[in-house]
Amino acid sequence: MHTKSARRATVLVTTVALSGALLTACGHKSQGDASDAAAATPVAAGSTATASGSPSPTPTASESPSASPSASGSPSAKATTAAPSKSATAKPSATPTKAAAPQAAAPAPAPAPVAKPGPAAPPPPAPATTHVPPLQSSCKPSYPRPNDPKAAVGAALTAAAGQSRVLNLSNGGTDKMPPLPANLVKAIAWQESGWQSGILACDGGIGTMQVMPATVTWMNGKFAAKSDPETLEGNVQLGTQLLDWLVAYYGDSGFGGKYDLAPDPATGKTPLLDLVIAAYNAGAGNVHYNTVTDPVTNTTTGSLVIPNPSYVANVKALMASAPWNAAG
Image (cartoon, rainbow, N blue to C red; front, side, top):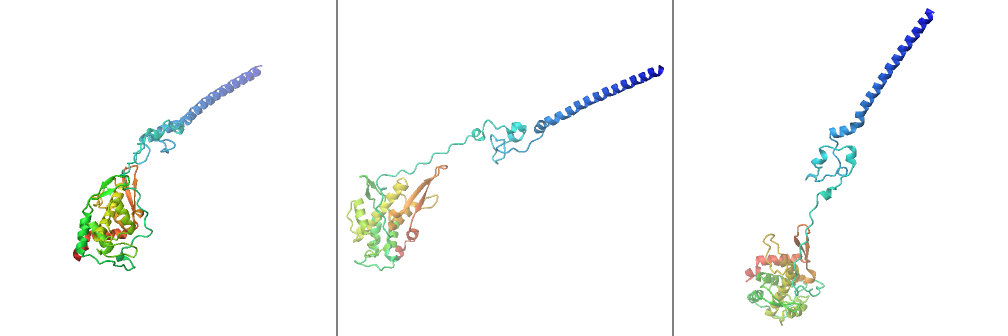
C-alpha cells in the first residue's frame, strides 16, 4: 500500500517535473523565435537603412538624370548627396533634364548682302579657253600697226583709270562708277602686252589691254560708247570699261554694292580685287564668289573660285613693283 502510494507519488513528481521542463523549454523556444524575428527585421529593412545610411554608387545618367549638370559633365550634388532606396532610384524623374534646362534658341541666319539690280545680271558666256597674254604664249604675236611710245601708253592708262564712268544697268537705270586705281590698270596692261599698243595675240587679243572682239561689242553697249580697239585711246577705254563692269558685277552681287578694292584693314585680303583681276583674264563666267552665313555666329564669309591664281598673283606683284617706272 505504502509502496503503491510511493510509486504514485514518484510518478506524479516525475510528471510534474517533466511538465515544468517542457513548459520551460517551450518558453525559451518562443523567446528564441522572437529574438530571431527581431534579428531578421533589420535584415529586411537593412536595404533601406544601408541605402539611406551610406552613399550609393554614383548613378548613371539614365538611372538618375541631373536637373542641372555641372560644367565638367559630372552629376550634380543633388544626385550624389543622399542616394535614394532601390525603389526610389528605379523610379524615373518626373521632369527630364532637357526640360529642366531649356536651351537657348539658335540665332537666325544673317541676311546675305543685298545686290543692286542691273550690273549683277549674268555675264556673257565664258570663253571656251582662257585668254593667254601674247608675252606668255608659245604662239608668236603679230603687229598690224606700230607700237606707241611707252610714255603715251602710260598717259592713256592713267587718264582712263581716273574716269568716273556711267554704266547702263540691265534694268534700264544707270550706275556711276568710282575711278579705278591707276596701278591696277597699268599692271594689267603690262601683264597682257608689256604696254605694246600695236600687238595682236594669236587668240585675237587686241592691243595694249588685249581686248577680245566680243568684249568690244559688249562694252560699247554697256557704256553707250563707240570705242575703237585699234586705237590706243579706244583700246584703253574698252579695257578700263571692262574693269569697271567687273567691279560693279562682283561688288553688287557679293559685297552689297561696295566697290572698294583696297585691302581689308583687319585681314589684309583683297577679295573683290582678286575677283576683278581673275575675271579680266578668264571671263566672269569662270570666276565666282560664294557666300556662306554661319547660323551660330551670324558671320558671313566668302570663298573665291578663281581658275587662274598665278595670273592674279602676277598682276598684284606688278601693282606693287611698278616696273614701267624703271622702263621709262
